[in-house]
Length: 284
Image 1 (cartoon, rainbow, N blue to C red):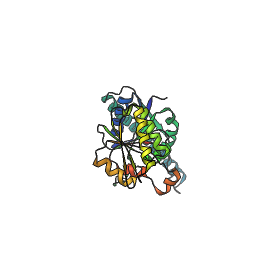
Image 2 (image 1 turned 120 degrees about the horizontal axis):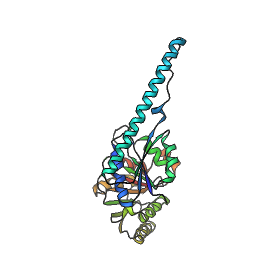
Image 3 (image 1 turned 90 degrees about the vertical axis):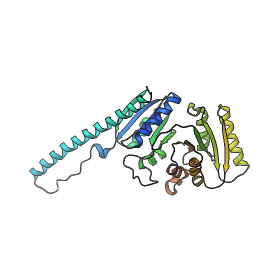
Image 4 (image 1 turned 180 degrees about the vertical axis):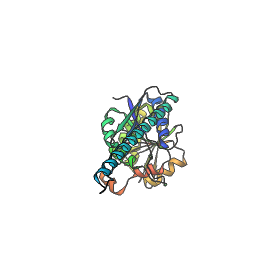
């Protein structure tokens, strides 16, 4: 069992929120924090040949100058990455987190995730990244890639941290939802928090039994939860419910009907990330 979480940060406004949520999680669970910043290949190299058909001597001089500029740019990008990590570690230190490390990586984000994820108990990422279009409802492309790729619990931080007291568990009875219940029952993160388990859809004996079983699983772990069965479509019901009733966090299974299906037609997971202004904890 690993004793650290991996927090993916960039230069966006969400980086502070990721750090502050990581500090909150560390304070409740005792997990260490590994801060990871990934420098993409486009940032650190990959020059376009601009020499065209100019003469050999001039072309050689131009390529040498471009090479120097590329090297300078790569140095600046690396320096910026280290500063981002230093600032993030300072935020954790200010919050009282003593066990924190930094990791500056080069390459593809998903390759980094695949390499480091096995040593992490969970992964944290901001809802939108540095390069995201801030049009309403638009998600960062890296977030969607990470949601689909990670196999560990994934904590998606919203823009600003606030204390978390009330937790909504979206429960559909599927394998990912049951894994979410199991995770909550085993994690110190949820001790003393107010928990509600909600199923959205048609009422019936199976749905009621599923909710009762989920509540019993938490009760066996010493966690108290109430339950609700609501009509409608999950994405349309859960988003407003979170805001209207003041929930501070959502826990749910990710892509419960199969990843290929959602790759083409979207999913409740994606809609919930878009709609909710609170952090989400997603489990596959």
